[in-house]
Length: 333
Picture 1 (tube, rainbow, N blue to C red):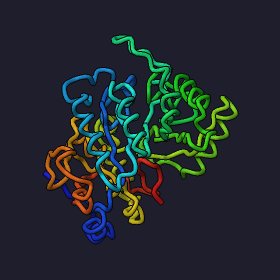
Picture 2: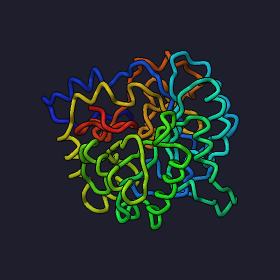
Picture 3: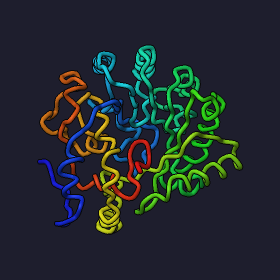
Picture 4: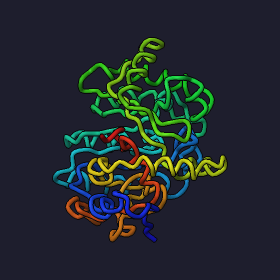
């Protein structure tokens, strides 16, 4: 069932939501959740990734990956393919998909957990030392999660040792040219540890630059601040701590109608590891399919079919419209 946002009568949001937010614009980005397996199990992860997520339908298989690539190569107007997960690099189809899409001239993004770069999978023996150079060779824009420049905050959110492993991963990306070569963009992602909105993005970026360069010599292009969505693990934690209602109130009271135009659901489409369609990765995590498209697969539609589509919503959408807004690219306004 499609739910309406629990908003107050008479608020400006109701009118704007019924028109602008409920329909998409022209689609230029395909976001592929290639799999939920990850070397970490972060307490804010909205798709509940972990090393154990290896079950049926949880990671994209090769036949599905080939149909997705064929679709992307055939769509006029598609400019960007954005890989997310889990840790996208842990899917065995990741490298050949990147190669095929790069050869076609598409802009590629990898939402990289930098701890993966020094990781060895104990079960398979797979190592991921190849990640920085491979991404650099294919000009993949790296979006690296780094929830704080302080060790305690990172380890509290991502697990013991995550900070040191993240620092080493970012160093390796710098060594491959990321953050210094104009063709190799390295963007870091901050998300709050507690139930509050992120601070101003540019102010925090200055702090990150100062601290990471002074301590480790790490450089990067941009810092993107992203609101923690009140779903899955984060929602369960809020419920356990009796903070869910207060957090939702914070998001609702911070609603900003100027964020509507830049919401990611209006300009991209998301698919799960089986290539089923969703308006965003958050809706995917909730099993909230794109209205009127039901549980259709990506190859059953064209990019033109996805423009002007109705967008599925629920109360988590307040996370994207609070304050300066939140998207896969950080602040919206």
